Image 1 (cartoon, rainbow, N blue to C red):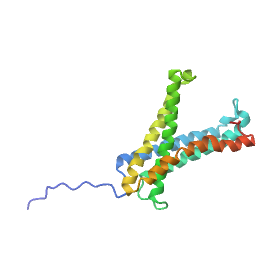
Image 2: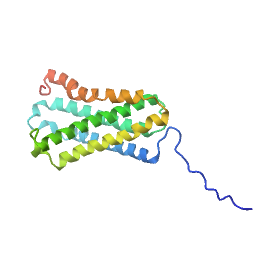
Image 3: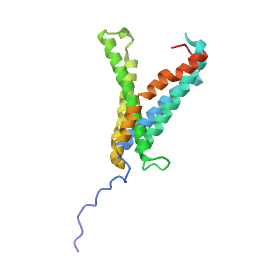
Image 4: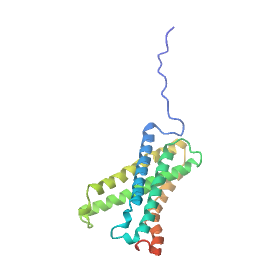
Length: 198
């Protein structure tokens, strides 16, 4: 009896799950967010804010540092949720909003840094002497993390057949987060006198 030489069909990802490439990117982004949050934790454990010209505002700097660490931890959770299977505790549309929001927030931040760097190098603004390997690496890190969020963000609506509203809501709402973190939230500790006034 002749054996069937037809090759077995390749196993495709389960419905709602991304391929291994997107999964790997999501896990890598989550690890980067977690490692970056770990730096903020290190700042707390080494009393980084008690020395220097702003030592009088160490308590306010500590509050902001903890807030940033929390946002990074939340980013790690969003990255993992975006490459996991169908979410059980929240609707897929909410994850879509969050991952698109993370992509847009970091994209705006990275774009702002790039524009600032170009302005410094071109002489439009002062500070070209402050651009070094560390600052360039910092900017590149955020560009890559933004792209890392963008990859599962693009695949998410296709995986769950979502409308474009989730992506639009995430993209439009994203600028509110940097505004909240950089302007609105520091206003309260500044009013209380625990950080320098804006």
